[in-house]
Amino acid sequence: MSAIHEPPRERPEASASLHGRQPEASAIPRERPEKPSSPREPSEASAALRERRPEIFISHRDDAQVAADLAAASGPLAGLRLAVKNNVDVAGFPTTAACPAFAPAPPTADAQAVARLRAAGATVVGVTNLDQFATGLVGQRSPYGGVRDARRPQFVSGGSSSGSAVAVALGLADLAIGTDTAGSGRVPAALQGITGIKPTLGTVSVAGVVPACRSYDAVTIMARDLDTAGSAMAVMAGGPGTRPWPPAAPLAAPAAPRVAVPDELPAMDPGWAEAFTAVVERLRATGAVVQPIRIEPFLAAARLLYDGALVAERHAAVGAFVDAHPGEVDPTVGAIISRAGRVSGSDLVRDLARLERLREECMDLLDGFDALLVPTAPCHPTVAEVAAEPVAVNSRVGTYTNFCNLFDLCAVAVPAGTVDEGPDRGIAQFGVTVVARPFHDAVAFDLARLIAVRPEPPAEFAGGAPPLPADRLPWPAAIADGGGVPAVELFVVGAHLAGQPLEPELRALGARWDRAARTCAAYTLHALDTVPPKPGLTRVGAGGSAVEGEVWLLPEGALGRFLARLPAPMTLGRVELSDGRWVVGFGCTQEAVSAGEDITKYGGWRAWLAGR
Image (tube, rainbow, N blue to C red; front, top):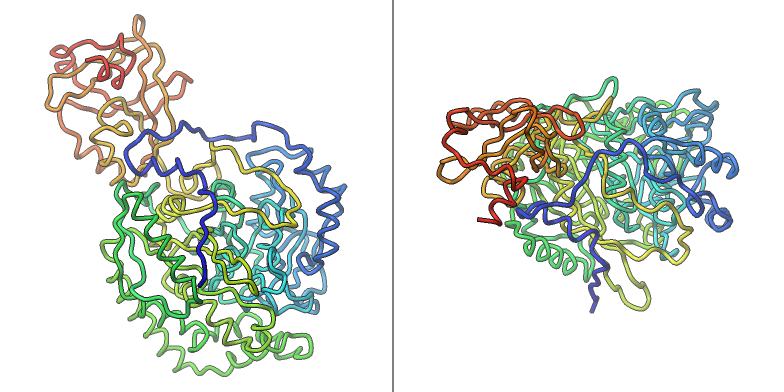
């Protein structure tokens, strides 16, 4: 019987932010607080590991050059080593898409996603192997060699972002860019025990990316922990040609999230269904409401991506090259893409109509839920199993991922435990994916944090940068020149503080707690004569004091709704903080202040409540 193991939770205290307790203080860093040093620099161990595992990288930069760039790097991602899937342009490296004949000359410029990470301080170390033309979920369809699992070399890596995932898992990179059409950024992340973020379609530029299915392609990020991945996504998202975020998109999961799970778990290996059930119970224990829904319509849509006419987009992307160079193409990949070229227009129209019907049905099933939790992969096949049945095994691996981009959903894949598959197979990494509506990336991110674990590193782990500080970049809140939800900094001093009665009101509007803060020394605080009691903050200038409070990030589009619900005598205006910044904050009428009790000497609302 397979045994289920749970490695240490990833930052288990982080769940407090969804349950009314005060989160840890955080801020938005612009620089890493310390300069990176050995062992973050390339080491002899990593060079030796690359020699033993030559299939991971297609090309790697000189280690001395990488070390020099790491030492000179500045910005929020300084010191982090970046690997890039080789269907994404990196200046100076041929973009082969795992087909050498496809790239006669290297590009002169980075893809936009790469350029944005580099501008934030990340250092490119090389370009990684993949399933040819990003067609596959197993990592075995490449002339550069099949990529093997980081822990069990007789098993596949998962794909198509195979080299990227294994490079991160083995500590050869701290971040890696992948792409994801049917699960290529999520499946290998799950099988390698790392995090993979697949954002809402179009929020990260695909300029400089070899298309697979242009309508459904996404650029993804992989890292060994959520905060590093989220900080990278904060700077990678946005830029010319990207999809704008709705101003009312949520910045956090609600205080009491409702999560759907599949009513059945087809295609799961022994022990894997039990592992998923254990994760569901762990999520319930955080206070989330978890209920089953019918999963078959989602899986029916997933089958359309390869079994139906939608595969025609793959031929539109690279079919002309594949048809003209049959000897240069992996046989399985060539068969898939050539068959796609024979799809009729009427079949494509029919399947697009069916997809729309399934989308409507599935969105109805998700009505009333904040997210859907699914296994990322139902199994971890061996190299031999894939060789024996390359198409059937690949299809099974994508059971729970293929539908996501077809429905324009976002997803965060995280490690969630392990499964003991017996003495012959060993311990498998088990991962789950939180899927949410478009632009609800923050909801998926927060819920993933509740269930993520931190696996033990592989035996061959070559070291790498530690995770970013807890003060992560606040993706998906917009930062300077970044893509994300336009956010308003809202300073609160009373019942909207974390853990106070009206915190859920902010959560319901999609607000995210950002940091503890205080005003400059120019304010008074009064306990107003209201039911329930509320504080009134007033600027008096000279003779005033600093008042404790919190800054929340509120979606810009939710500010009007928040103001409309604000009862008298409360007001919103500008408040000056101790660092000299002016933000939106609470005030009240002078009439209410005159009738209230001056509690400024307590320094804040919580202190006054404690001293009553």
